[in-house]
Image (cartoon, rainbow, N blue to C red; front, top):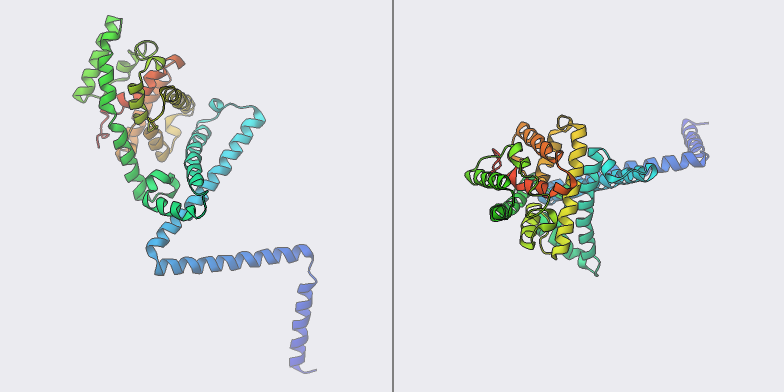
Length: 334
C-alpha cells in the first residue's frame, strides 16, 4: 500500500470517527463552531465600522453597551422582585442598593416604554431612530449617553430645576404672616434672609421649622397648585398635571426618597462608591457633577441628618429641602 493510500484511509477514519460521536458531542461541537465563527465575523464587522465609519461606530458601540447594561439591570430587578415575592418583603424593607436599583429601573423602563409606543405604527421605527439621534437627552436613558453627554445633560437638567428655586423661596416668604407661632415666624424670616444672602443653612436652622411643614401653611395637603408646580420642576417631575395628581406624585416621590434615606443611614455613607454618592446627591437636588467627592459626602450626611429626623407627616420639609440645602452649597452654583 502506497503512502498516499495510507493518508487517504487515515482521513476517512478520522471523518468516520467524527460522524460517530454521540449526539450531545455533536451539538456541543456545533455550538462551539457557531460561537467561534460569530465572534470572528463580529470582530471583522467592528473593525470595518471602525475604519470606514468611525463616528457611527462610536454610536453603535454605545448603543450595544447600553442594551447590555439595560438587560443586566432588568435581570437584577427581576431577581430582586422574585426575592421580595418569595420572602414577602416590602419595598421599604430592602437594602439601600436594591431599593435604589428598583427605583432607577422603573424610571428607565417608563422612558423605554414611551419609545416602544412611538414605534408601534408601521415604519415609525425609522422615525424613532432619527428622533433618538436628534434628542438623546429627552428620549434615551443614561445607558445610551456618551460620557460627555452624561455631564452635559445633568447640567442641563439641573439648570432647569434651578429655575424654580427663586419661586419656591418667594412662596416661603409669603407664608410667614400665615404662621401662627411668633417664634416660628422669626425662624422662617431668618432662614429666608440667609438664603437670599447666599448663606448655606445649618441643619438645626431647617429642623427648627419642621412644625410649619407638618400642618398649615406648608403641609403637603396645604400646598397650592403653583407651589406644587414649582416643587415638581425642582424634583424634575412634570408639572403639567391636575393638582390632585401633582400632590400624589410629590407625596409618592418624597416618600420613596425618605425610605431610601433610612436605608442609606443603616448602610452608611462611607460604604458608597464615589459614583453612588454623586448619584444620591443629584437625586436630592445637588448638582454633584462638579463637586468633589468629599464635599458630596458631607452634604449627603447633612441631608440624612435632616431626613431621618422627620416623621411621615413632615415630609413637606424634605420636599423643600431639595432647594433649602442645595441652593447655596459651596461649588453648586453653576
